[in-house]
Image (cartoon, rainbow over all chains, first blue to last red; front, side, top):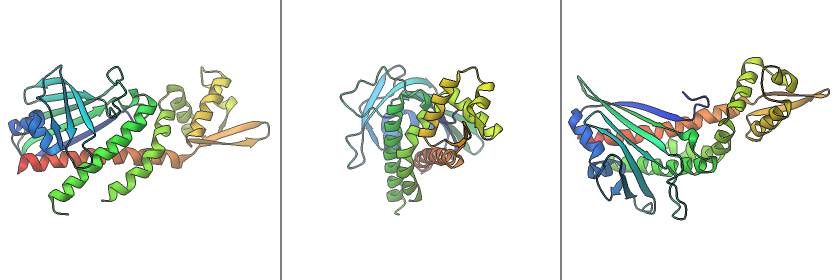
Length: 152
Length: 113
């Protein structure tokens, strides 16, 4: 935990699916887009940017731009992104980004997935405000989708 | 969904809060007030390598974010924690954390169907 406790988010979840299946859902851009609700323009390639649009109606103006860091077959997928890179007039590439890491481990019941997003403390204060706000918007969309999905 | 009602209020107020927390000296001052109870600037500067003037400046930032409050005691100003504000920070982080839970929940439905 960082001194402020605001630098990182850590999660883990047990998925009752084979490791290879989870790996594909995370690293195949089309599959990632299905559950994340984003239409990506290209595949994930280590060292390269992948961009796309959020696909939820009313939120298509939100861009997603990730720089893939590591893809270690079926065990580690990581990328960096700028959580608030939504103003076309601003060049975010020289600003600190947050790092998202998905770690997979085969267990008896399926696959254990660990997620860490870190680096929030490094974001410029004014950007962090926007980042959290965008994050809020983005994840609110995800919640709506789940509600639709389960018929709520 | 309950989470949606919780977050928007917290977000507006959370940014200056995190900005105030994002400094080593200020975190040390908070830790001191946390363990040492209400303290004067003199009390705070005793254990700090930072000057009294700097401490005063940092306390003003913390005060602006609603993390600490002060009251006059004779010629000194006594500083103490504003505990409710730290609770806000925890609540806010819990909200972000929940968003990840939801996204991973979507992933789970996706790979298990």
